[in-house]
Structure formats: C-alpha cells, structure tokens
Image 1 (cartoon, rainbow, N blue to C red):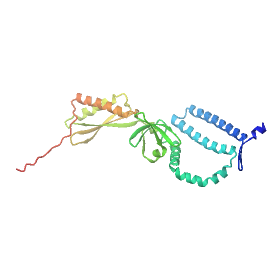
Image 2: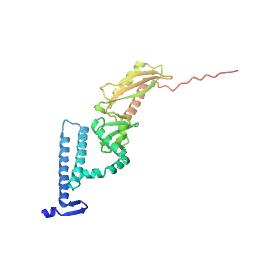
Image 3: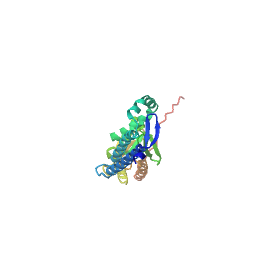
Image 4: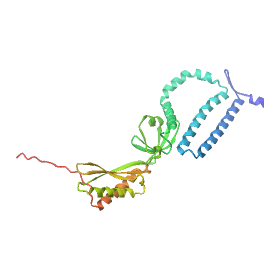
Length: 271
C-alpha cells in the first residue's frame, strides 16, 4: 500500500507529484463539499433569517471555503506556497493592471453582499430601468427586467452608479398620478372622486391611505396628484394605466372636464 501511495506520477526539477498527494487533495475536496452542503442546509433551515440574508451568508461562506481550499490543495500537492507567491509577484502585478476592472467587480460583489443595501428579490431602479435582483455573484449580479429579460450586470456598475432600491427595509413604495382639470371644476368633488377610485383598486394598499393633493394653478388647468402605496412594484406601470382609465371614467361621469391647452393670440392691425 505504501508503495502505491509513494508512486511518482510526475517529477520535474525539485517537484515530485505522488499518488498520495492526489488522494489527499481528493479526500480534502470531498470533505469541503460535505461541509459546504451541511452549512447550506443549516443556513436555509434557520427561521431567524430571511431569504436574502441566507443567500448572502451562504455566498460568503462559499467564497471563504473556496479561497482557503485552493491554498490548502496547493500545499497538499507539494507546492511551496511562499515560493510560488514570491516568484509570481511581478507576474501578479502585470495581471493586476490588466484585470483591474475584474478585481473592481469582485470587490464590489463583496461590498454588495456585506453592506446589505442590496439583496436578492429586491426591486431596484438603475439608469431609469426597473429590475428584480435574482442573484449576486462573485463578479456580476443577475437581474430580471419588466419585459422578462435577464440582465447580467457587473457589480461595479451597482456600486459606482446611483441605485434606487424600491423595497429597502421592506417598506411599500409610494407612487403618484398627475391629473389636470378645468378651472370651473368643483375641487372638493374632484378630489373625493379620484381618492375613492384609487382606494377601490385591488392592488392599492388601504394603509397608508391614498390621498389627493392640489399641486398648482396651471396655464390651462388645475393640477392635482393622487398618491398611493402598492407592493406591486414590478408591474406598477400597469396599475397606473388601470387607474388612469378608471379616473377618466369617473371624472367624465361627474362632468369634470380635462381641458386642452389654451393659447391667446393677439393680432396687431397696423391699418
């Protein structure tokens, strides 16, 4: 048995690879896989953590185990780690300059996982587009858009640019619809009508309660806005469209007009 384990598979210079080295690496990898599997099961069984936190903790443990395993496997294969690092220092510097964007994405991924401002299942707005976070990885974050299109975004884009998290701290988001009506409108009737229509929509939350605000006097119309809260953030534009239709019907039923822009033209007669 000792003879088999001591059998040399490769010999080059001062380095010799034996079967015992290969068995040691395979055994270690099997142990690490089992440990990672058990830890993942324990994390996802926890009742004190929500899904995004479970995902973050599992990812961080996976990264740590992977990093440590690479170093230990090299040691088990008989490599002198300190010599390898010293001998490849210049090479690593050159690679670092060439892969600085990759390293930036990697560090950004760690920041996203640690600071907790962005989690799996969050709804975010980036560059005017709405996405749901599907997965935060080492270098990229996988997002899904409103059109069911998947976007693979570098993590540095999420840390360097402004990102609006619509579901941060699980608070429902507030939205508004702008409405312009004629100057002859009964203001109190109009505000009550719009509030009731908005409140009766199935996807609008009853608490906090929707409300209507008189915004300003316009050139051709009185400007109002109806504010409401909803959990249906991903499909909010559809909800706004449905509300606009119902508001239009209700205003028409109560003889409340939406005016066209009006302009007064003065013609100077020189004769």
